[in-house]
Length: 502
Image (cartoon, helix red, strand yellow):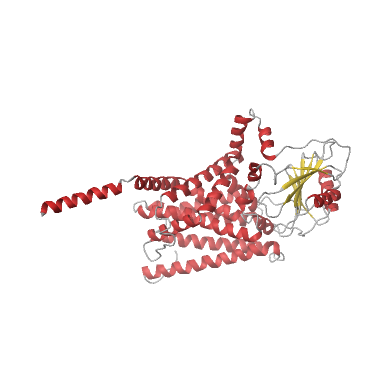
């Protein structure tokens, strides 16, 4: 009997080892290790890019909020465009190769003209007004696109982060064999680690298609220069201009004696040729020269492409269109990446959806590190610094906004505030205390942004150009305040009578 039992036990051990060493189990373990290693290595940069990207969805709204005194109007006339271009060229020392006129839209009911490094907003009659502020919104986009680094280096890093994000999503899915079984599992009443694990897995699974799309489009933006260089080497004998022309369409060449652009005829002919096209901006190529011509970029209903571009002779006759809407599939896809990445294709509702999913992706970055930290009991400093960094980032962004409103450069304020706040959290008593102070600091920063804007633009702060952001600041402040009250309540239950933070 003893021998039989011994053999049964031995057989069970062999069976368990066999299951443990099955190829599928090995793959899952390998994917989990890879997922953790990649995520931990790039967590801070991914969090920063995801947080700034979520805010950047509303960059048009932030631009209006930052300069609420700029005239706003829904319509324009050919005469106002002609006046704007004439005034811009008259004050320019050298005519730009391309002069841009951006038309008013629902999201940005302002018109502005630019060429080279000079830009002005326009009054409704086309006269030049103030230049756009190179303030907080500009800083936010630079942070998201380039991490405040020189353009080429920054794009390479953010593009690489897009590839890394795709790798994290794929390894995360492969490391989760019970994908469908645990789709709605959330153990909120269990340990902090299990709660974070369930949050991480649910957000990761539900949002995986969106995150993959974000990663791929982000990688395209960042690595397009590398792709063009590689493609030119492979197919066009290192002629990058030839490759770009093959993908996006070639420029046209004309010779004309016309000195003025007939904008009225151009818009009329566009309406006849493409009745559903909605113009969004104009490009006057080679202004004042005998090779000048006009391009009108226009959106098309039901299409993700950023625009189709229609070319016009100076007398207003339609010459051709660039084929962005009906050309090769690759060209159509390449010209749809922008709207896919920023969610600017379905009005405010698509922006709101992107903001929700961007917030989920940001939380995914945070929860992934939290899961790993829950197993590292001896790494006390990291338990303090990571939540410190997480809460310092939005606080530093808010401080940069205050600085920009007061006409200080936002980037230095952000770059000084973020590391100082993060390092300071390393001297606190616990991670729970770090989170409390982080929420308290962020609440104070949000109220400071609100108060500064009200103080500077009291009569404009509740106009359409600013009210959405100001109400959003107050609502976010209320949410954080509620979280603080809940945090203090839990602390008092664990530690006895509540003590002031000191």
